[in-house]
Image 1 (cartoon, helix red, strand yellow):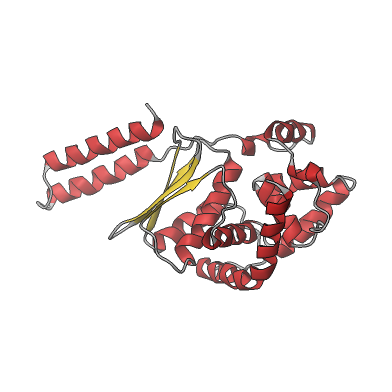
Image 2 (cartoon, rainbow, N blue to C red):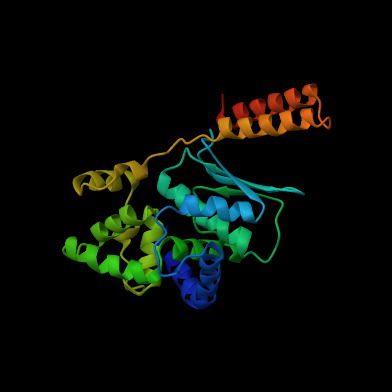
Length: 267
């Protein structure tokens, strides 16, 4: 990301943060939590919240690591497929991004693909979703407190401070950096090219040196397909028992699911 693009993001965030705070508080209210509390396991919170809105979250490793998520809204249920071939920090941010689309977006969608290598899009809805995701994953009160703590531990080194925040919130490096600028913890008028140009290899190396959790930089490879298959089989058997589905139809559905699954995984 270049400096000009970062400044555009900061400008958008500052202009829309008040409105977005209301949306974040509304979501916290929906899940029965205080908006000042850090979400320690966003996936656990998100799954049940999406279910209440008619969406099923499925985690699965995709062969295409350019895709962050696939979203589809049918007549009855919606589906959010998260690509667990990506690092855990990216998946965490992606699920917060999708919360905005499902709970807050003004325009409705039927299908959508989120690309992993484009964290900050040009469209207003995508910019809003990213602002929301950062605020949800890294609440202001706690983030300011932890920034001060980790900056002291890092002896004022801004990069190490960001890496410690990244580890604490299990959030992507760029999302943490932008959150620091949004909250005025870093000077948006004096953007450091050094902080912008940090690459994944150097992040991983410094994580090891600081004794941080390198595992959050790796893909989880979690695969929910077996669970989905079990659910479909159980519902199908209930349908057969109720005489509104036959065995051949269930077998065809399961066969098609397995073929699609193989295509998605690139097998």
